Structure formats: C-alpha cells, structure tokens
Amino acid sequence: MSECIRGERDSVIAALSYPRLLMEREIKAQSCDQHYRFSEQVDDCVDCLYALECQSHSDKLAAENLQDASSSELKKLLAFGYEYVNYELARVDHETECCSCESCGWIRRVTPLLSSI
Ligand SMILES: [Zn+2]
Image 1 (cartoon, rainbow, N blue to C red):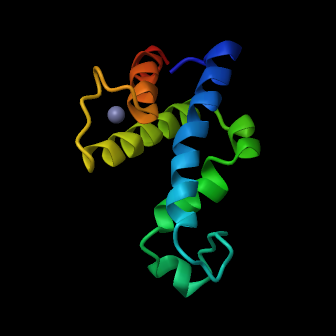
Image 2 (cartoon, rainbow, N blue to C red):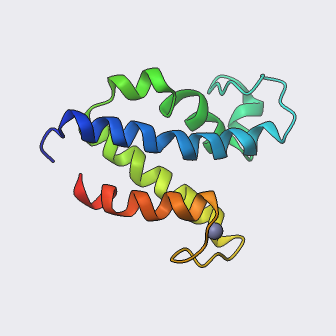
Image 3 (cartoon, protein in one colour):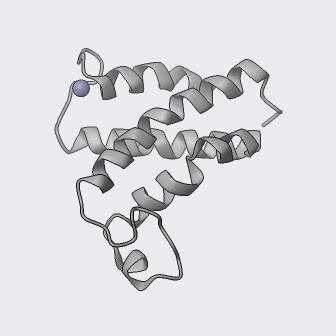
C-alpha cells in the first residue's frame, strides 16, 4: 500500500477509537489484578480469556502508538478492529444494513474506509 494521505490516517485513527472503547468495556467488566495492563511476563495475563482485548486496548490501539504506526500497520489494525466489532455483532444478531445501533453505524462507516486505504 502507498503511504496514505494525512486525512486518511486521521480517519483511521479516529475510527479505531470505537473498537478500543468496546474492548475497554469488555475487559473492565472483569476484575483484574494487573489493573488492566497486559504484560507478557505475568502468567495470569497470558492465561486470561481477555488477553487479546487487553493487549490491544492498552498497547496496539493506544492513541500514542497509533500516531507512530506506519500506514500498513494502521490498515492491519483497522482490519482487526473491523473484525472485532463484526464478531461482537454476530453474537447478538444485528441487521447491519439497517440497524441504528452504534456498532452497526460504525461498520457502515468503516467498510468504505477499509477498502479505500
Ligand atoms: Zn446493530
């Protein structure tokens, strides 16, 4: 992929705040001895059911890391966020084309963005 233009980067970074928020809600509904800071050195973290969400939330999708990410990393993260939101929606069976919830609205906005970058 060619370097995406500034505006596109900003749109991707803005779009990623939504899956990050969903992950945050998911992990903070659990109790966590590590204060929701994922660490590969901690056995509890490695074995945790929410390791993916926690690691993504506190590391990959953190705003300061997104600013430094390359265009191809951003694209991968957006694809990952898209998959995550879709997966969450599949558990509750939404009609994404016409549903008015936040997640379905996000999917509709991000689908063209994902194919344009
Ligand atoms: Zn919906």
